[in-house]
Length: 370
Ligand SMILES: Cc1ncc(COP(=O)(O)O)c(C=O)c1O
Image (cartoon, rainbow, N blue to C red; front, side):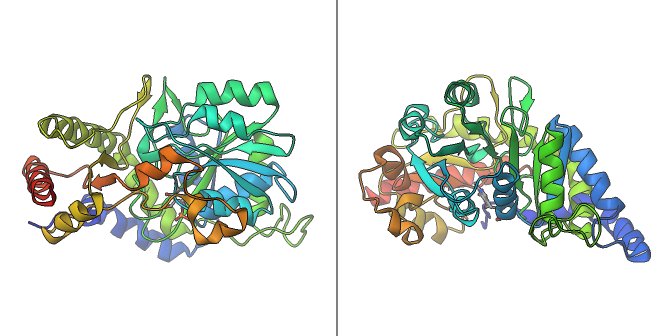
């Protein structure tokens, strides 16, 4: 049996007819850049997340950089990010001209550890960017208290977490602003690249709207240098069609996660994921910890299962950040996790049979690698 990490074909079938009609309408009106489709998707998605503004951009990495630039993060500033994330979280800080400072992970949830964030704060710290890793909200209440106490901005990397909530609060509503990605495999993914910044702040939204469009609010007037980074109308059509399904897709992911919890509870070698109290998880990834991860991963891949490690190398040890002179041991919890984490297939349409197959192959792999 072949089971991908995420099955995009199954999602497409649910919106294929609607897309056909909406694409035809778009091809007729040819409003490909920043037209009605983009505006109406932004309005719908802001409503879905419970924030005032959504500004659609070309990808999640640009969204992160514009999120930082919108609050004037620049040369000389430091921004705290988790050591355990995709490189984009830290790369955006560098691209904005600032220096990333890393924080370690919580050993159970893999979310950023608040104590180690606190240790990194100094007079150059401008912002903290926690990541709502794997689909659950980072410990925002503690981080907000810390940010308020120290006068640092609290922003969010919500690339994994469209639809996630903490006590009913969605992405972009606890921090000043959130950046998200519509990369195809995300919980809300386009048919190409896309991203957005979400915020309740009128000023931040206006700044990102200008930044994404060459720094311009009025055509051919450019008070600052910006980007050419807008969400395409074609992507907005896809995202708007998918958004109607997102709430029940998230519920299906939660059901699949509960089923894995049950099926895997028999396997002593497997450490199950932990959800923080008050979090409505959207299970972008279902991440377990296993011994001899790389060997187990190979066996699963050989059995046709699209398992993957998120992430196999922490950001502070990446070649791109060699100049920051970090070494192994600087963020021991995140480093240990990077050798053990294993994401197994989860997507709304996954069947009970597929999940049983994944678990039985995982059991078999564990017994073979000893
Ligand atoms: C946590 C995280 N942040 C940011 C990004 C960047 O998004 P994009 O690929 O749309 O640039 C990703 C993408 O995978 C991600 O996983």
